[in-house]
Structures are given as C-alpha cells and as structure tokens.
Image (cartoon, rainbow, N blue to C red):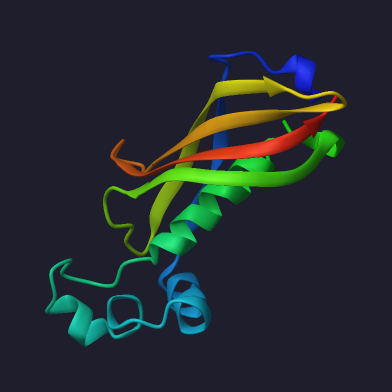
Length: 140
C-alpha cells in the first residue's frame, strides 16, 4: 500500500503461526541462549513451569506475520523505530499466535511518510502475549 492508502484506526488481522518446541530451542540457541528457552528440566522447575519462547522470537514472529499480510507491499522503504515493546505473557511450545494490527500514527513527508502501527499478539486462548509500536517509512 502507498502511504496515502493507510488511514488512522484501520485494523488488520494476520494469519497464525504455531511455535514448536524445536523452533523455540533453535531460535534461542542462536539468539537468546538462556535456560528458560533451552533447558527443559530447569525450565520446568522455574517460574514458568516449562520452556518458553524468547520475547525476541515472539517479537520477530509478530513482525513476520504483519509483513506477510502484504500491506507494506513494494512501497516500504525501511523500518524507522520500534517503541513501547512489551512481553506480556509467556509463549509456550505449540502456542498458536496471531497479530491484530492498528494504524496509530501517520506522518507525511515530502516523497513518503511514516506509518506507525501497534502490533498486538495473541495466543489461541485469546490472551495477549506481546505488544509493540512499529514505524516504517512508506513511499507515496
């Protein structure tokens, strides 16, 4: 979509994605090698009573699902900011996630504009697990 096609308050709902135990452990082994993501026995004895996904993985999956809607299309130039990032609830193996996206700010520029959206990620039980504001430079 071109910058002019975005409107304040417009919402999008993404497809969903299931995070397997294997994908959680593979991501964590490279990007967030902490026990709650990698060590099943220690994680089971910990605060979350089992393995959980890295918040960074949850954020990356949320971004992936948003991009896959195609709303940015070929008009996206670059991301410019991510603000107010919150990891609200843990994501467990086999949780199915989807994202509800709302356009919350539009800043016009000469040849482009900044579109800011709020990503709100939910598991299949309807519990919000992540939120964050994402800004991107979009062509006109």
